[in-house]
Image (cartoon, rainbow over all chains, first blue to last red; front, side, top):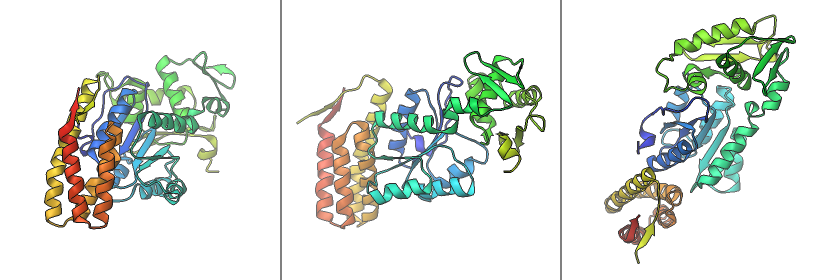
Length: 252
Length: 97
């Protein structure tokens, strides 16, 4: 696909190897090249040419990182970031990309809620490095904090095990991966599609979104999400699921 | 002078060829826009060329795009026309291997 910015295309990826990235870029040449770079690095890219279409898609989908061009045909990339942070309460790591290089523009993008800023013309190595940096800084990127802040659960990354109140839980590999994915994205709405591609990989024809629902249901039971643990795994209508940490679940 | 651009990735080669094809179309579109006095359309085309050229390894296209954008902002048709000629000449000299 050359004219990447004109259509939404879901790429087949191996489950869990890369990031799901939303690329908001109206220039088809720029979009096609960035898409190539990201896919070469095993990331999965969904491209949007307009801000409104991107924001609308978030009702049904979710991503690990947003890459947002400043100048768009309908609304500015900075306004997109503002809407994400203030109206949608969406704090997914976001990089703003633009030819604007003045300090006031960089300040404007960061003040709007962007995590980083990249000047065009883009350079492949720099893009990848900054992408990795925002990924590391994201809450789910700091695995040590994820593990340390999961009480009453104890997550043993080395042995791929989870214990509850000191008692080891019996989980399949897939259930463990799914649980860890939720813990890494706590308090974040995750679409079924996001879960499916990350945990199973969408090249597996045998897996449907119904499989996600079944596994979530089993996980809810095994991890005893609810009053007993303080963690809640909530379904989001026509979207997916959100694991709410005790603080969020209690509304504090 | 013939400019050479080398890549071993077949998909990247196709992508670059497609990109250059679009720039060749830009030459005609820019001349049409200049004839119609549509400086805003010229500015946007220059802006996009500036943003994408160097990323494709074609720094000269970014430079020409930047110059076209600046001249269009000034509504300077003579300078725009000169930069379109420069773009056409550059594309003619470029080969991908």
